[in-house]
Amino acid sequence: MIMLRNREPLVSIVVPVYNVERYIDKCLDSLFSQSYENMQYIFVNDCTIDNSMKHIQDKMTDYPHRREQVILINHEVNKGLTAARKTGLSHAQGEYIWHIDSDDYISTDAVECLVNKALDENADMVVFDIDELYDNFTKHITLSMPETKEQYLYQMIIRKTRFELCFRFCNRKVYNGIELDESICYSEDYATSPRLVYNSNKVAYLKKTCYYYLKNIATSYTASVSVKSIKSLERAALLLEDFFLKINLEYYAPVLSLAKVYVKVHSMKSSFYNEEAFKYSISLFPNISGGDKTKIGMKDRLLLFLLDTKMIALLRLYIKVGLHVSSRW
Image 1: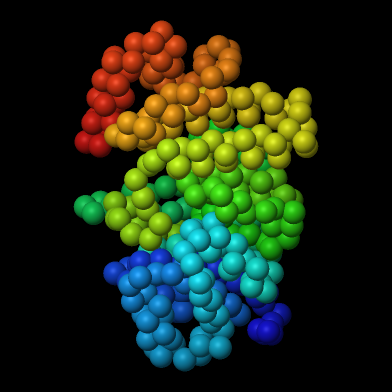
Image 2 (image 1 turned 180 degrees about the vertical axis):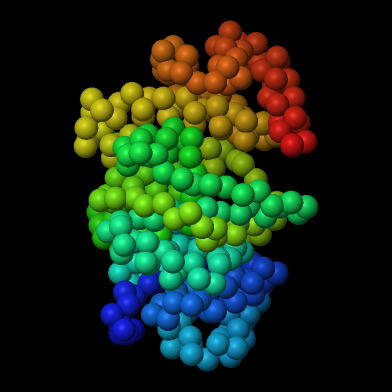
């Protein structure tokens, strides 16, 4: 077991590994060169078929002081991102836990700054700014907090703020009672992050770019949208509904109902180029109320109107034009 040094809380970094040999070196350099010393690195090999694990072994020779802080775990079969994170979480000894994707990287002082923020504000969760890295440009994302945790949770449930697990630094206690559902292979973060926010006594915001998120790359667990992935997103929405309605039916019922509208719209757009998945998306949540449909933006409201009036050919054209326009920007 890694011992605490200088009264610094131990931080566990959980990194699933699957087919990222082209990108993992930059991730490893950012992790092993952290200014914060008391670390535990957990790499979960989810049956990668490339040389990603060899890159980890080689990189440890460049950072010998980190070697005994590293745990390497091998899955016997490929289980997917959620299962890999779950495996890593079961080995995490830290007071704080941060899930990081192996094709991304972090700033070299990120952990030190996040620990200080969590301790200074007695926060169970810290969110921060990120940079999305595209082929030809970088998009800066500010993840500032609303005034209350409840407002933040509301925005997350209806998918109006970022819910990626990598974009939050958490005290391990917020995972108490939270089961990572391995059957959810798409939008798994949507199923998890709102529950972690609910379990947090306070969510703090650090005005600093801590995470660099690679976009437009076909690596790791990235896959095309399929019926399986749409069913997975449906499962995530129902899991959140089950979790929050048990807590407070009257308070959470309206936002969870609205969330289904956004999930349906997102599914239809994301599955457009897969005919089978698109048809399944159309059938999602058939009992959405008319009142909920009036609470969304005009463009999405028109999409649902075309569906409700069975103008499917026009609906397809509308989505296709929208996707083309968004891709140009």
